[in-house]
Image (cartoon, rainbow, N blue to C red; front, side, top):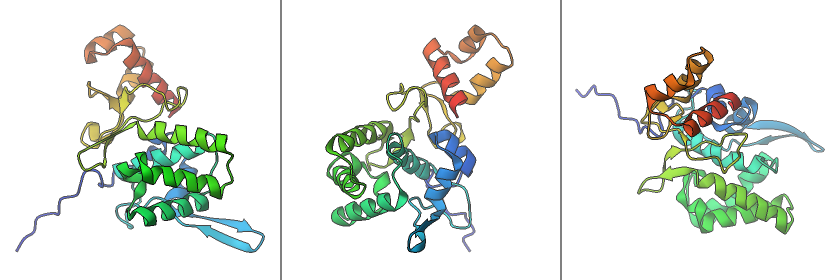
Length: 231
């Protein structure tokens, strides 16, 4: 009898609670929760319901996966200047997914090509954005997509989260990789968690000592501080 435990894809392994996932992506827990479980809202015709935009790996486990984190990062781009309603995003996603026969479009590399263009165009039509507004949204959207490293299959392998004070042009220093540091934010190429750096600095350890211990430069320490303080 085979009693081995099924192997779970590291990208889909439940590992982030709602609060920590929201911190990593830079949004409020309530916003992320509505994307994951859906949301009821009132209309003139009565109560309506927005379907979830993100599906957790296991319905019985409240934790999110790295893939979910990447999906939330992409959705974050739509809230930078435009607080786009969930129902509009769902309609535009369904439209683009059906046209291009793509499941989980928020994870697909096709977002950077025709499918993504169609998604943004359709979303702009639904929320009645002006041409300039649609261009601005597309620029921020593409800026977020460029912060995702992908493998040969096109699916996300690592994420460079946005530092709130620097926007989507934040340097690619802080990164999240499900195979490194247990999926927690760390400094690219160094492997040390951003939280570890800031904890030592907050304990009044000399900055030079922390930098020497982990082989960090000033830009890397500054990025860790800015990321952790915004999270």
